[in-house]
Image 1: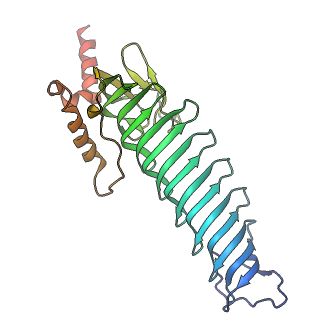
Image 2 (image 1 turned 135 degrees about the vertical axis):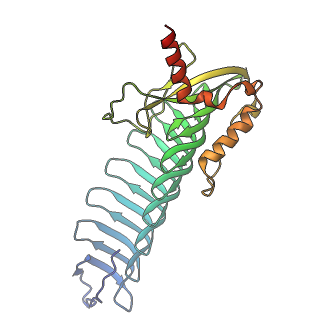
Image 3 (image 1 turned 135 degrees about the horizontal axis):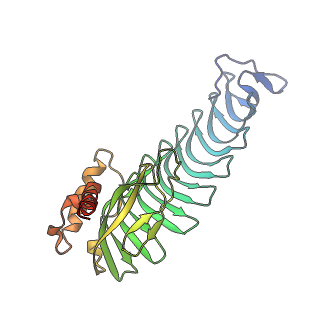
Length: 302
């Protein structure tokens, strides 16, 4: 905010006035406050050109930072508020809604690697319904985000198949299904296992989700997530003809008062009960401990 604590003396010759808030050139109100259209060169090298109201940036304006970043959009009481575009020094940019200087509402973020996120934001974090496009593979995630992480119902869209399921801290987790060109469906579940290659010091790219298949119908993500040190492993269960009634629930706008875990468990059960023979498939079978116990038993029997 640029409002001065002392009342400036208007320069009767119309020359720029120098004060601790920078060099200002423009209109003022009867109280001597910046009001209307004006231009300010701040002492730190930043510059603002646009509208003021009662000493604050208010209305339409462009703020150019010394480091090359700039914002062009709406202001309210000295803060970014409304619609605006922000260009960052690294070449990324955000186009969308702002509230109290933070990305908030609907917006699109263009990353330096050409990835794109389009969806809801809350307090500068991806939060709500959103879609993330991976430019290098043209794969798209569409689903629920919570505090900048994929969390809850969603789907991963590839060129010839989709995965429908649930996410936990950026990793698919629990029951889900792969659909292949609306012909058939492979049902199963994801478990999280410890990554033997993770030593606690490796920095992991949290935005990449790439499916790698092997000969055993297992699918592994090639890169990990904020749940560092874990990898999601797909366990196939059965194949059925395509039936949209067997798809997991689609993502819905967040209701902050409802916990994600409770909604996921309820929705999974509703879908899985429609698949024939689900009663012989215990809930604990898709937890990591279940598979670790099986592996330990096989090792002891050798």
